[in-house]
Amino acid sequence: MSICDELHEFLNTLHRFGFSFNEKQIPLNGIYILFEKGEISHNSDRIVRIGTHTGINQLIARLKQHYINENKDRSIFRKNIGRCILNKCNDPYLQTWNIDFTPKETRVKFKHLIDVNYQKSIERQISSHIRENFTFCILPIDNKEQRLDLESKIISTVSNCSECKPSQSWFGLYSPKDKIRSSGLWLVNKLDSTQLCKADLEHIKSIVDSSNGVPKCFN
Ligand SMILES: [Zn+2]
View (cartoon, rainbow, N blue to C red):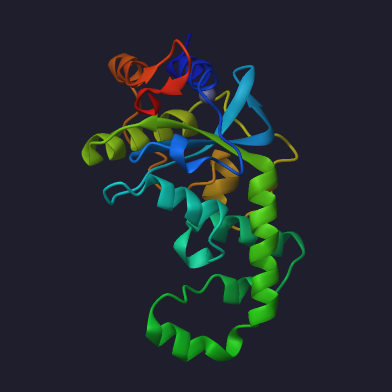
């Protein structure tokens, strides 16, 4: 059994959150692992994105940036889903979409390019798409270094696994980003760093009470 086999088997036993999720059930700190409708590997739901947060107690805020807050510049995941929506239709608005409007100078400089209503309609489509197609489980981890280390290792393990390939109808295949299309993950970074070892996997399992698949801090 490969590490990725075991990882999928274990993560597929954990409590699965969808939209809308109950904030009281979400730990304050941790790694979230996303699964997507129609995507299968290792005879289970295929991991399609792994993410975490850097700030203290920001896990819920991070999840809201993906599922709720309609601002592509605060969620690279939303931005990438939007890129696929636009690219699928060869929509020239993709060029404007790619601009990060967070810095004030950029907002001023490129203000004339923004079609506010159109952009809002894309954001709404993204929200619906994410809510309908993605579910997630959580590994509660308070220590930031540990979170970032395991996040990176899980990403590299899945991205280098020969069994974890996207389906032919995977939405990410519309991405203009080569790394998304080839990795089958909604990610472009940390795809080729250190992978999980057996001890890391045992550590991941020890984080969660596998008897009921619910993060320990729920209790
Ligand atoms: Zn795999």
